[in-house]
Every structure is written in structure tokens, then in C-alpha cells.
Length: 433
Ligand SMILES: *Cc1c(COP(=O)(O)O)cnc(C)c1O
Image (cartoon, rainbow, N blue to C red; front, top):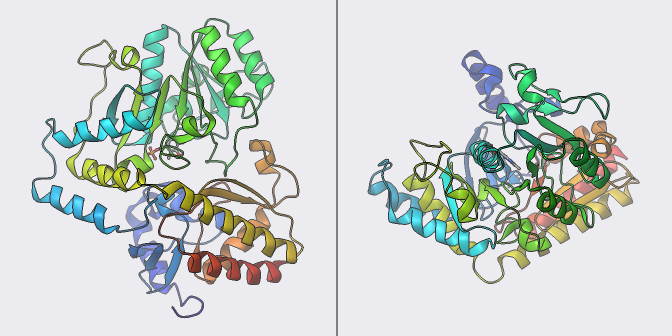
């Protein structure tokens, strides 16, 4: 590829045009690049680890569609499966053999899952998990951790109250205060705050939601014993523990964070990778809970395109490849070498950098302190992040355009890709430092 990046003139024009008819020019907010004071690239195509914009620039892609593209883009096996399925018709609104085959793969990967319901997005997966938990426990309150993201449904767009005894409030206009009050928001990785919430709302908490490895405030792994404590307190209090593994499922291990840490959730939300790059997601758990869903049980849930043949074909192909021998060892090796390279580059430029990493997901926080929760994340230097982002982009490295997102490494990222990325980082850091 040419060294450096050409003009982004066409993307700029395309964005201006899109802004006329799409709010903010995009169909999901973070795509607008507002967090990095720039405009988005319009993407023409992608292949393996590379992304190509409409100006003809090539980038090494560490966004990977925000996680799904763990095999890299346009993987021939996945494409083949999707084309074959498309040839047979793209949607029937009726059961197919491929859905059962996909469910079997998920049940085999997760010890805590006996049955799954397929839906189209992670947002829906979490919505459904909450409804199931409320129905099962006949309680209304749910607990979420500040900085964890669980999609854009009303109950989860809440911020913690201003004091520890205050009720949560909506974090988005349009969410009723009375609904927000049913969601208790506490800091991530804080076992004491969690115990206090259980004490205060004794016998009234239906579900506790957590990203077992937080990855939507940047990557923030659980501290030792945290997930264990959540598990124990939920069991003691008859609350449903929901692991939102929309990012971590099939990412940090085939069986997600539950396999990695040896802890079982009651309900598991899956998305991103489980759609193989197409829109698909799932909620899963023991039969006793899952059978509460319609048509068997009293909890209503439905979807016109659920279990869609194209998405199911992509998912089956993706999960088959991931079940192969050394995928997670390779992802770990690539992740570790990128982390080491970036740390070394920052160190030689005298820039304070803390990298949190689990396997193939990681985040760069420009701080010399450990980052264990959202307050720590907010304490990192965003100005340096913006310079880092801009410099990397100019050098042909496409990172998430926000300091609160993860770097995703895929199986398509080669040793050369990682080396190039580290070289660009050396230049960028030495210009910042
Ligand atoms: C992306 C994400 C969601 C939302 O999934 P969508 O498919 O975007 O609705 C929910 N939870 C987590 C942890 C996510 O990363």
C-alpha cells in the first residue's frame, strides 16, 4: 500500500450528503466520529484485516464492525454459506434446520445454556432477558453497572443518581423517570456497592446485569472475585444473574467469559460474533427459564426476521471455524504482541499508557493508573487519545473513533499487520511525546 493516506475528500462529501437525510449522517451514533473531532470514512469494501474507503485508502481494521468480524472480513467460507443460503430464499418466517444446528452449537459451547431464543440484535437479547427475569422472580428491580452497555432499550439508558441513596435517572431523553427508577445503577467492579444494593432492595431485585468483561467503556476486566460475588449474592437472593456476553461470547473463548472465569450465569445474552457479521443475536439459559417464553409460557417475545436464513448460515459457518483447534491461542498471541508493541512504543516516547486486555480485545488508556471502573476510564487523557487516533488513521490504522471503545483483533490480522501497526504507533507517539 502507499505510505500514508490520501485525501478523504470523497468521504467528506458523502458525509455532507448523508447528513441531509440521516440524523447526524449515520445510523448509529458512534459512527459519526464525534468523539475524535473528525468526520467518518465511508467504506467501499473490506477483505481480511483490511478496510477500503471510497477515496481508495487502505486501512488495517481494528474495529471489525465493533466485534463481529472475528474471522476478518469477507471470509470465503462465511461468504459461501451466505450465498448458498441466499440462493434458497432469504426469509420464510418458518423454522429451518439451520436454526436447530446453530442452537446446538451454542448449547455445546456454553455449559449454562440449555435452550436459546434467536433475535436480531443485542438490544433485544437483553430486553428479553430482563422480561424473563422479571416474570420468573415476580420482581421489578434490575441492577446494572455504570459504564456497562446493554443496548438502547429504555430500562438500560439510565445513569446513577447523584448520591448513593439517590434513585437512577434517565441518561436519554424520552426515557420515563418512573422506568429509570426500577434500574439500580452501581459502579462496576465494586463488590461493596453491590452488597449495599442487595441490602437496600432486599427481595426486590429480579436481575443483575453485567458485562463479565466490560468492553463498552474500553476494556475493563473484572477484578478477582467480582463475578464470583455477583454469582453468590444472586443465588442467595433468588435474583437472576444475566451475563451480557454480546462482545465476549465466542470472543474470549468459545464459551465466552463464563468459560474463561469458570462462572455460570443464569441467562446469557449473545450477539455480534454469533451473527457471523449479519444481524443475529440470542438469549439463552436453562430450560426452566427459557420455556417461560411464548408459545410455551406467559412471557411474550417474537420477531419477523428472527433466525433469518442468511444470518443463521453466516453464524453456523463462523462458529464451525471458531471451534477449530487453535483459534483462541492465535487470537491471544496476536493480542499479546500488539499490546507489547504499543506499550513499548508509548514507553520510548515517555507517554503514560495503561492497556487493559483479555485475549483479542484491548483498550489504550492514557494514564499511569490502573483502570478498574468508569471513573478511572474518565480519568484517562482524552486529548492524547484523539491525537493517537488521528495519527494512527493517517498512518493507515483504523481504530474505534472513541476513547471508550475496544480494539478488536481478528484471526485475519497477520504478524505483518501487527508489526506495521506498532511501527505507526512508534511514529505517532514520538510526535505526541
Ligand atoms: C453491542 C452490545 C449490545 C447491543 O447490541 P446491538 O446488536 O447493537 O443491539 C449489548 N450489549 C453489549 C455488551 C454490547 O457490546
